[in-house]
Image (cartoon, rainbow, N blue to C red; front, side, top):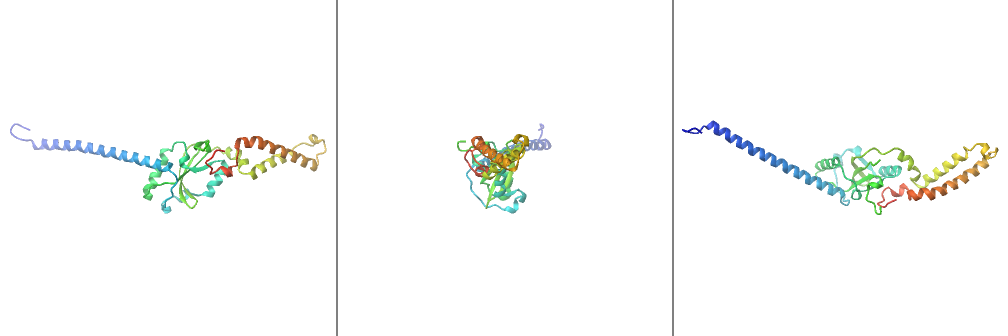
Length: 239
C-alpha cells in the first residue's frame, strides 16, 4: 500500500497467499480425517475376523473362482498334513495387514462387511482348549464353500506330509506297520533265518514283527500324537 492509495496487484497476491495457506490446511485436515477413517475400518475388519461365525449372502460373480474351495478339499489337505481348520476367533497369532487390505477390497466390491472367517494352520497357532507355520485365511461362503482371502508365512515343509502319513487314520497306521514288518521279514538273509528261509518262516517273522511294531506304536506313537488326523482337522481341542 502506497501513501496515496492501494496497490491492487499486491493486495491480490496477498489474498492468493492467504487462500493457499487455508487450502493447504484444509487438505491436511482432510488427509488426517481419511487416515483416521481408514484406521477405524481396519479395526472393524479385525473385529469381524475374530467374531463368532455369522454367514452372509455374497455375490459370487465378483469373487475369483479359482480361490473358492470346497470343504472336502480343505479336509483332505488338513488330514494329509495334520493341520486344523477352525474359526478365526481361536487364532492366537497376528493377522497381517495384507489380509486386512484384501478384506477391505472385497467389502468394497460386495458392499457389505465380511464375517464368518476360518483359518487353516498347524495346531500350535490356535488357542486350543487346554491347549514351518503357514496359515491360510478363508471366508465362509456357505454350503461348504470357502473363499481363500490370504496366505502368509513360510512354505510348509513337504516332509511333514510323509512324517504324519501314518496318523491320517487307523487304516494308514495299520498299513504302515504291516508294510514295515513285511519289508523287514522278506529282507532278512537266509543265513539269518537258519539257512532255510522258506515262506512259512518268513510269514512267521512277519507276524512276529507286526505285533512287535504294533505294540511300540501304541506305546510311543500314540503317547505323542494321541489321535488321528481325520479326527483332529476341525477339532478345537488339543491332540
